[in-house]
Image (cartoon, rainbow, N blue to C red; front, side):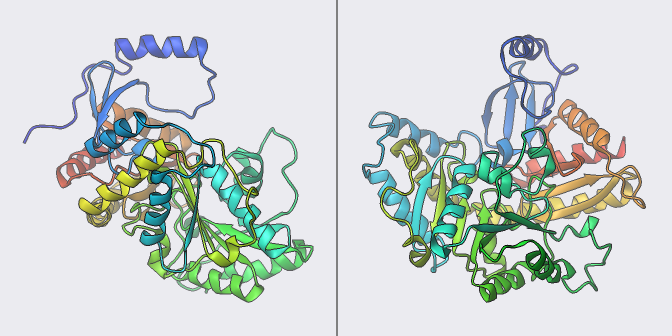
Length: 438
């Protein structure tokens, strides 16, 4: 069996180096750290750079290309749509109407309305505005480590200092509670015996910090940007029950976790959650800029015509792509494939962890996993420098990865959902070599 990956020479290659130098001269250098190469084209899970090197992609373009890079059916849908109309502000179009119908049909039955925007930040902000209008209150409860976008209200709702520092005061009306990051529990408790101590602590947070005007809460099924932090089983269902007891609007931010990423179409399906509002993005367009707010009629009825809008939201070009994405996922059974390949990869990564001096934790579900690197497994001191070495060494050997985490020490494992067993095993062989050579 021939190798999928092929990297010749030391990175960056000559053409990548030339283009990167031009980029440094003219582009604002605001992006996060990536391996030193320039993408040229991609197909499925394989990326080819401008020097002809081939890599297996563990990033999905930051959890976007769920159906794989440049899927032919998606490319055809985009080409056909481009010949008709690209944008049509507020007027209904067939692609938008049919996508709304499709989204409601694939969602849990209590969600019966869809509204389309362009980015995840737009969608989380829209959800919080709907919650405030519906409840008549203005406070939002969110969580340490949460990431809901980089715009003003989304940034204020987030629980990551790295997204806030240097920009002055955040918006008022947000209070924060601990998220169950069991590997780094703020209470130094054990998940086997704590009884969801962090959930019990929410009552203290609300009692001490709320002005009595809570509208709702927003939470991610797993915290991607904080380091692929997954809560223990049962936590989210208990949290939902608590929100109901308080009369709060329950917002689930599935911008990263939906569209098969965890081995279910929506991550809320794992615990039969019934959120009032669900934020969807990234995978919905598999490369096209589109997001969606799914809602119940009851909560959405608080919004009147003209209250929400987006210049490019629901444009027929992006909606046509999103319709093709659902068809591809259903026809190729990509949700099931994510569960199968994810299990193969997680078991192998857990074995690698036992052999490694620096891989402190492997966690996740489906094709959404995090590898947390530490300087010492006993002290758990974060090792962001090691994560950087993994990024560079992995690329040199033919696998593209990125880093996340509160301490920038977590490598994301999030390949496109079309990954085959052959591609999984080859990339795992590479990753084992990289990690054990540290």
